[in-house]
Length: 396
Image (cartoon, rainbow, N blue to C red; front, side, top):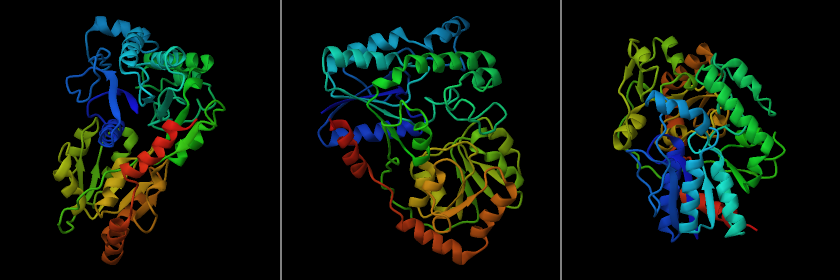
């Protein structure tokens, strides 16, 4: 089977890139042909035969002249449609598996795939893995400019995004995002998608509020590759690893002054966290260095205040024997067995957060029991995930 994986970023950037790289690698290992389409970048590490990719679009940098063209390009990209059409004709895939595409690639790629299906391969499957809430919320997070969960756009009333400047607190960007969402909602562009894979039951529930999606969704938690647990003793710290940003809720660590934290990651709150006496920031870590940090921690924390989907960080921590204190929000409760592999706390509630962290750090017997439970916990591996995925790829 030939599978074209589409994602706007083709370099290591976040959870969706981890997903597409590992998925493609495994599919190739069992005999399928896999190519990729997305945006060019100096760090790009996957490819297609024609070496065709859209131009790099940096919304946070670049020349003023380039930025003037972004409002049009983020709604509809002629370049993306033209280039993916060439890749489709050359590769002749059986499946186009779309991931993150809005703004950089735009839904123009969906029109290209549908046109190719009509002209060349009526059996082509167009599959979409929803890594966030982009099709329901122009800001993709269900999050407003004041840092609060917001569902005002649920149901297709996207004007609220522009009204409240939800995207990067920018009126201009929010207007563009609102226009993009409104246009494709009215055109019913997403009707061409055959199946929507939701990495959490929570996300599926939200997607199902749209009648266009309701009969197309399937919940499948992300897979995770086995991790060899380092042989080490627990040390006296609590770990946060991931993006250091507002929606991740990491500023709650500042209120837990008598708990020693290590923060591994980068982001706009890095300087703020670095100034706190109880927090040691160590920058972005990966591989063995990160796994040792996780394994040595008494527990890890995942204090997000937005509707998290299926965070790899939670699964990685549990696989390495480290219980997680996580927000009771979004898809997080689907990954943590409360009282067994971690504890859930009320989002943004500093007192509840501190209480739950200390319940693990100050009660050795409970900590040891949770440690053992974590090591015995099994998440779905890529092999099992792909068995279900192949059913989706091949169903009539």
